[in-house]
Amino acid sequence: MLLELNVRDIALIKEAEVNFREGLNIMTGETGAGKSVIIGSCMLALGAKAKSDVIREGAESAYIELVFSIDDDSRKEKIEAMGIDTSEGTIVISRKISPGRSVSRINGEAVSLTQLREIASLLIDVYGQNEFQTLMDEEKHLGILDAYLAGDIRKEKADVAEAFRSYKAAKANLAGFNLDEYKKEHEAELCRYEIDEIENAKLKEGEEEELEVLYKRLNNSKNIIEYMDRAHGLLSENYADSALMYVEEALRYDEGLKGIRDELNDAADILNDALREISSYVSGLELSESTLRETEERLDLIRGLENKYGRTVEDIFAYRDKKAERLNELNNYDENKLKAEAELKRAEDNLKKACDRLTKKRRDGSKGLCERLEAELLELGFESVKAEFEFSEKPPAENGADRVCLKASLNRGARPEPVNEVASGGELSRIMLSIKTVLAKSDDIPTLIFDEIDAGISGRTAQRVAEKLALIGVNHQVICITHLPQIASMADTHYVIEKMQEDDRNVTSIRRLNGDEPEGELARLLGGAEITESVLTNAREMKKLACEVKERKRTEAR
Image (cartoon, rainbow, N blue to C red; front, side, top):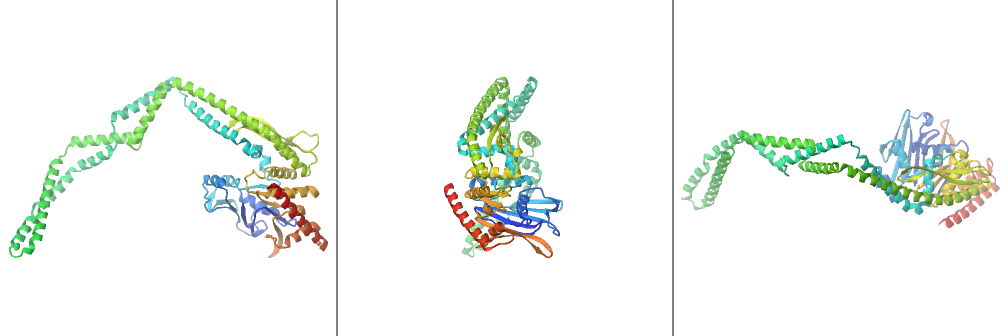
């Protein structure tokens, strides 16, 4: 859920920090206090286009920060798959807006607006007079239907996804059979040439390393012989034997020198062995130009093959095997192509059957969703409502072959038309509220923001809207701006947005109401400029009744 909203130098806001809570968060304030700026700040942080006048006058830049808590494992996995670390259990989305440019970050890492919007879509939905993405975009109507059907179509959706993957694989396989006779024979000849070249080289594992050692020794044999001759000459001086002779003489006078005598004997033996080994090594290190040339040519051959077919001998063998497999395919090209065509036909048939089963489930289930939406909308003040999902076919994809459009008739006798064409902004907000009420348990977006959900309503309809917002608050965090006391009375947490003067300038602030303050704000909404004791009493009674209704509704929902 959304934990914090931090705003600096946006419009009339110099600096504001809001700590949101679970359930229904209500924000109220006088007209012109800057309520729309709060929602606008959220939208800017989530990637909305920033206008040139959004930066507070006199400030160099504007800054917005949203802090979300993440405790759902599936949501964590989706966000992690986008390259964002969720190990701390929080996501911090920020945006700094300067004249002519802006920078968005998630957990301190700069991201594009596309990345930002993709991740934000998993965390929050904002519904304002101009932000009804889900209803305005017909591509998202299918998501509404599928969210309602959820478990009822889980198997069918999984079958379609699997069938589509098989279809794509079969289609890609057949696409490889695009050679005419000349190209087929040319490729086969090339395969045979490459296979023969590798086979004729008779490569062995580890051969290159052994040849490199041999080449280094042969190529430097003159230097090696020169150095070994010098070493042999120095050892041939036989200083160890001379030292031993003198120790033997001294031993006649002191038996205690036997240990030194024995050590010199050992040293003499070691030196003699070294002399013999040097002589043997030098005599065996005959400089052979032919051997050097053969070694060099063999290394050139191996390295040439590695440049063409792989970095190692193992890679070359893998390339050979791949070409042998391809040659076999080419030798049986026509037969394999017929098999690939048959496989694609089977995959197409399976995909169509899977899509048909999913379509039937969706069509049947859409009737129940429409009935529930109609009932909800009647409760929200619509005199006559008829809702339906219009189905049309699109090319099969991982999500099926259905294109759906939510249509509605809001006037008696009128033919249902797409909701984005027949509903006003206020009506769209109530339609979306109805959808969210029906989907309250299955919708997995944790935070919902409603701006001006109360546009054009009052009285009993306002009370119904308030109850539904409270009901959605059972399974979601809801943030709502309102000017109606019926809705404000349902708040689990109530905030007031105020405009005041500071240094001869208007600034907007927001604070959470505590104690009896919510009743006082309700009294202002009820009574206007003058708040009498009777208005306060009415406000307290409204808050008490709202708490009772809210508790009853939420108990029923659970």
